Amino acid sequence: MGHETWDLIGHEETVRFLQAQIQRGTVGHAYLFTGPSGVGRRTLALRFAQALACAHPPHAGAYCGHCRVCRLYPQQAHPDLHVLHDPGGLKVETVRTVRPKLLLSPRDARVRVVLLPNVEQATPAALNALLKSLEEPPEHVVFLLTARSPEAILPTLASRCQEFPLRPVPYATLRDGLTARGFPLAQAAWLAAWAQGRPGRALRWAQQPDDWRAYVAQIQDGLQLLHAPLRERLAYAAPYRAADREAVQARLATWQALWDLWLRLHQGLSDPRGHVAGGEIMRAVARQLTLNQVLQGLQHIQQGLRLLARYGNPRLVLEGALLTWPRLQGRAPDYARAVEQLIPAAAGHEPKPVP
Image 1 (cartoon, one colour):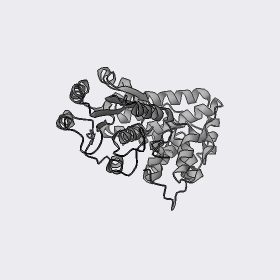
Image 2 (cartoon, helix red, strand yellow; image 1 turned 180 degrees about the horizontal axis):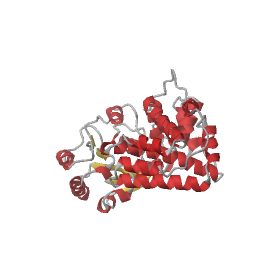
Image 3 (cartoon, rainbow, N blue to C red; image 1 turned 30 degrees about the horizontal axis):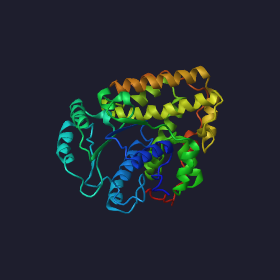
Image 4 (cartoon, rainbow, N blue to C red; image 1 turned 135 degrees about the vertical axis):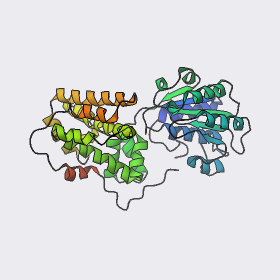
């Protein structure tokens, strides 16, 4: 059944639409998958490519899971799959290198596929080179692009693609998808709650424990800083330099999730993060904050993320956010101990591999 549904968590309507295109023989030459990082853009693109290229599909729109294509595509190692990605953003030289290969017929797949992840990071020269390839693509080539949003890339590039916006997966769908892969229910519930509808993020945290421990450590920092005087907040921001832009972005994004949770709790909205292990900590903090303080805290974090996207100074952005936070009165609880509840016990657990 997994190969029939491409073994994805969520995005069922998009999968059915793409499968119908394969079945009808109406596959286009370029697709753009948009949405937040970790929502499944790249995984969906690869599954679509696998269904297009499979040498022995059980029926149109599915893949067999056994042929050479199906063995190599998940590792992005098949010679008819070209993944164009450079550190810091796609360069024009990479595009020019692959273009002659696209004129060749596929070696043992049914199509050649060009995957361009995070195309919004490409250089202007690379984007112009891509436009030339998209304007007159060979019949046996399909381009698959991923980006945060169509607005993040050139309009002329987006207009040549069929766009499929991917939205966060419902909590229950993500939780059940994780348990189907062998995760204990308690861990699946925690991961689904804090991944906020992003299957890729949940799976990465589970498979790379250091990543989700780092995320939990950032949560702990955010809680502790609410009790810290201004001098301690300034000292927290002081070590960050221009090279730490991504680190500061990660912290602000984590804290944005915290303030978003407190806003939802104030509004009486249901949120799974308030009910999984450690949720009582979050509810207790929300009770100490006024609605106006929560709104202002969230606003300043969002402003900081916008400034970082425009290459604002990371230390100054972090200071600007922290100095506007209210200071909670009284002695800070032992957050280090309490936040450990947020870390699901995974000792000895081996999740089922995703085919």
